[in-house]
Length: 417
Ligand code: ZN
Image 1 (cartoon, protein in one colour):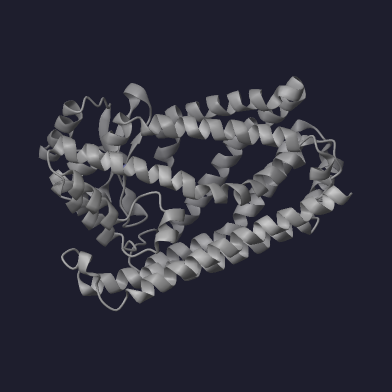
Image 2 (cartoon, rainbow, N blue to C red):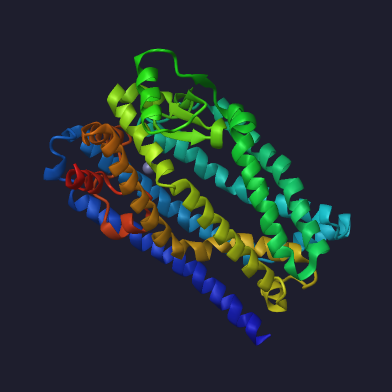
C-alpha cells in the first residue's frame, strides 16, 4: 500500500511539473517577444515591414495566451480523469454489461478515447474560428470543420477497434512476450497506413489534382531527375479549403511516392523558390532522415511497449488509480494517458535532432540549386505569410521547435553558400 501512495504522489508531481514547465517556458518566451516588439530587430529590416512584424508579435502573443489556458485545462481534465474514480467506474459498467471480453474492453478504451477527444473540441473550435480567423488564416467553414471531426472520429473507430482488439488478443495468446508481438503488429499497421493513407484516407479530406503541365511542372520534374528522386507524380492539394497556412510533403512509399504541394504554397512562392522547397524535402529523403525518424519511432514504441508490459504486471499500477488488477486493458489506458507526461521531457532532444536534419536538408537544397538565394527567399516568404515568431526565446525554441528559426537557417546557409 505504501508503494501505491508513493506512485500516486509521483504521478501527481510529474503532471504538475510538466504544467509548470509549459507555463514557465511560455512566459519566458512572451517576455522575450515583448522586449523586441517595439521595433523590428535589425536582422529582419529587409525581410518584413512594420505592420506585418507587429501582426506577427500579436499572433504569437495571442497563441501563447490561448496555449496557457489550454495547458491548464487539459492538465485539470487529466487529473480529474485519473483521480476522480471515473475510469474504474466506467470499467465496472462495461464489464458488468458486456463481460470482460476483449471486444468489451476495446469498446471501453475507445469510449474513453472518444470522450477525451470530445473535450478538445471547444479548444480546436476557438483556435480555428476565433484565433486563426482573427489573423486572417481561417478559410474553413463550420460545415467542413464539423465534417472533418466526424470523419476523424469514424476513422479512429474503424481503424482503432480492430487494431486494439488484435493487440488485446495478442496479450491473451502470447503471454509474457506479448509486447514484442504487439510491436510487430503495430509496425505492420503503420507500414500499411503509409501505403494506404494517400490512396484511401487523405482523399476523404482533400482533393488532389496533378500539377498542370507547364514550366513549373517541368522545372520540378527536372529537379527530381537531377537528384535521382523517383516519384510517381506531383500533386496539388487544396489546402486553401481550410487555411492560408502552406506546406509541402511526400505521401506514399517507394515507387508509389507522390510529391504533394499545397495550393497555398504554389500561390505564395515563385518557381525557383518552390524548386528550393522541393529540393529541401528531397534532401530529407537523400540524407535518410525519413528512414532514421522511422527507425527512432519504432525503437521508441518498442521501449514504450516493454515498459507497459512491466507496469501491467504490477498490482500497484492498477490500485493507484482505483482498478482491481487482473485485466490488462486499464494498464493500456493508464499508460496512454500518462505517456505524454514522460515524453514531454524528451521533446528537447527529439527537436534538437530534428533541427539538425533541417540544417542538413537546407544545405542539400543550396547545393543542388547551386545557390542559397531561392531557399532563403522561400523561407522569408513562408515566415512572413505564416506570421511566424521571429524572436523566440532560445530556451523556448530549443524545447519546442522542430525547425530552426529563420535567422538560424539564414546564418547556416550563409556559412555554406
Ligand atoms: Zn524540412
